[in-house]
Image (cartoon, rainbow, N blue to C red; front, top):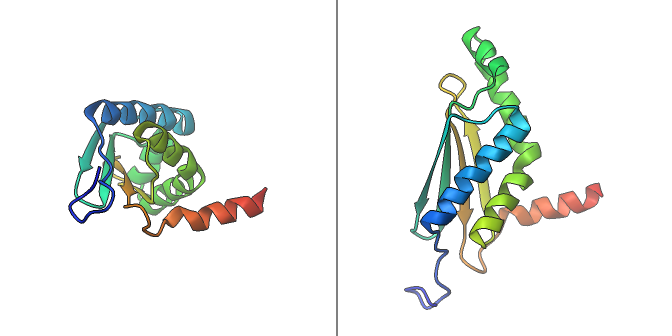
Length: 143
């Protein structure tokens, strides 16, 4: 299928795939954080580049909540940044397996007070630069 500019069509993400992503993200968060969010919402922008946004609601651990309530918001943010860094490949691989397309950029952030966490997966068109190429070469050196 061709897009408007004559190139390959953009990624199409179905409702079933969005539901599968929500379920898998919940499973991964439970696995890595010891608890899952109370709810996960997945939305898609079909504009190019296609982006998939996952909003996890109430995703703070009990320890995160204590830190935040006692004025250590930056500690919560640093904790989640470290978790996002070491688990990024797990989340990316899960989404790629479900969607069937390569993620070209991944961003993740948590709000230390509300517990809202957002993960953004961006699917670029074929031939665009890929953020993860540089990470793959770093990962190869670690082996």
